[in-house]
Length: 152
Image (cartoon, rainbow, N blue to C red; front, side, top):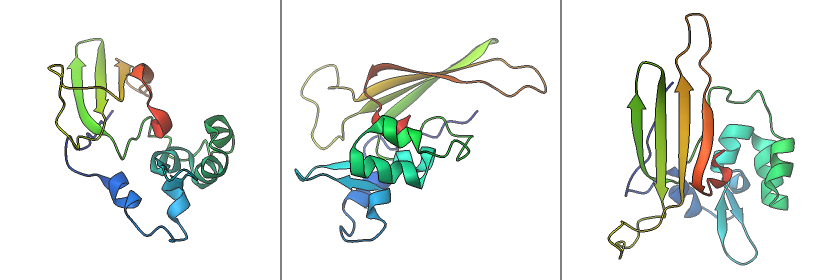
């Protein structure tokens, strides 16, 4: 099992796509431009579920429909991707399991005004019980709080 953390404060891949060429023919694979001027990142959905899933979500805004047309054979080694997240992970390991809590905050554009550090976007718990030789590790993923959006 591997976990790769994103940036706490620096811009990531998702921000780069948001500020890219709005007329680029592949933009829909990375960004859903909505009629009200907002943008939704589809890069995570693309990496986890494929081109059809990303394009379906851009057109319909329906995550269930997007997952239904996704490619289940794509990226079987990935369980969770957030190319636009900011935050940190906490890993706990003992003789029976490994637990990684991924904590994501809203983009840190302004300093949080509250002593608790400000709001969370989500907290996701990944747990991998100890596995035997020859077995594949099995991870369970639980959204503990917030909305992980297109990262699952």
